[in-house]
Structure formats: structure tokens, C-alpha cells
Length: 231
Image 1: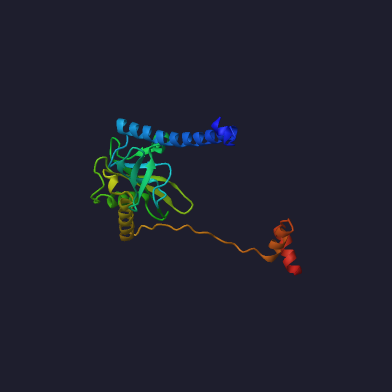
Image 2 (image 1 turned 90 degrees about the vertical axis):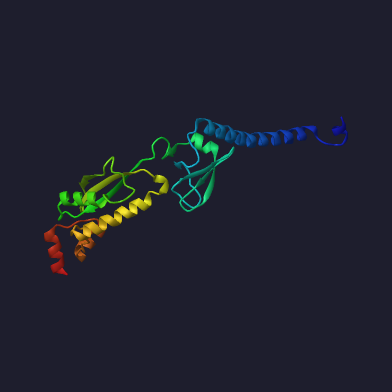
């Protein structure tokens, strides 16, 4: 009665109050979901500080969605990427989306490196050189041992692949790739094995052929010769 006496429309007030309550409800729902998800992560220990994870989205300035778990908080997880940027990832994202935990039960990770060699080279020699290139890296495991494979034949060379395991992906993966690629380049250079480069062949058409194609007609060879003689 007091509100009516003050000239306030009760219906409008009810609508406004309901809208505010609905908005608060949705906002609190997201917050509550993150807290519940954080509790689940703490209980099942699927993600813990020190783990190396990949997940949907991106971290900091990196688009590789790869990083190290620094902290588990009630509402979010702190993930540090290769650039040193710390990203606060909502717990709900890690519960509802697929997450790759590189160090969940076994920290070993297999790395594959493709390499192209020329058809002029012996693939057996190239495979042996690939194996030698990964033998002396301190982070590459001896068990399981590295393997080399001839994977296929491309337009401009043979596609080989070397596969090896490391036990400490938290110390970086791309730095090992870089070291091995440099070792492969050096050992190939020392033994004369060529890494081919894709080439394209361009053919210049005669003017008569170009005019025929422009008109939607392809003349027979003898017709082209007659056209050129007439010109």
C-alpha cells in the first residue's frame, strides 16, 4: 500500500526485480559451476601443479593452448605458457572440454620428425643417418629406442620419418625438435644426402593457343600451325 501511495507501479517493479534476479542467477550459476569444477579437480587429481597440459582455447600470447599448471584455485587454474604468460583458465573449461595431460601417468612423449630426401639418394643410407642423428641427444631415451621409417613417395622426393621418446616434456618439446633437425641437416650435408625443394614447371603457350582457349576452343596441332603460318 505504501508503494502504491508513493505512485510506484508495482507491476513494473516486479518485472525489474525479476530481471535483476534472473541476471544474478545466471551469473552466480557460472561462478558456482567453476567452484564445483575446482572441487572435482582437487578430488580426482586429474590436474595438479607441475602438470603439462593442452586444452581447448589459448594461453596468453600463445595459440598452441599448451602450458604448465602453476596453481589450482577455487574458481580457476593458473597455466603458464612458453612465453612466460600466466593465464587464468576457468575450472569449468577443464571439466567440460577435452584436456591432454602430458604428465598424467607417464611423462614420456613420442616425437615424430618428417624428412624429405631426393630420389637420387639411397633411402637405406638416409635412414641410417637419421638414426645416428638422434643417438647422442641427452634428452632422447634409449628405451624405447628411436626408429626410422620410409613413409611414402612424394612428387619431389621420398618422405622419411624419425621417431623418438623423451621423458621430460615439461622442459620443452620444440627445443628437442630444433636440436634434432639441426643434427639431421649437418649429418646429411656431411654425407652428401640432399633435401629436395619442391619445384614448379611453367610452360608458356604460343599466342595462337592462347587465343583458341580464350574463344573456348582448343585447336588441333595442325590447325595451330596453319594459324601461325597465316599470321
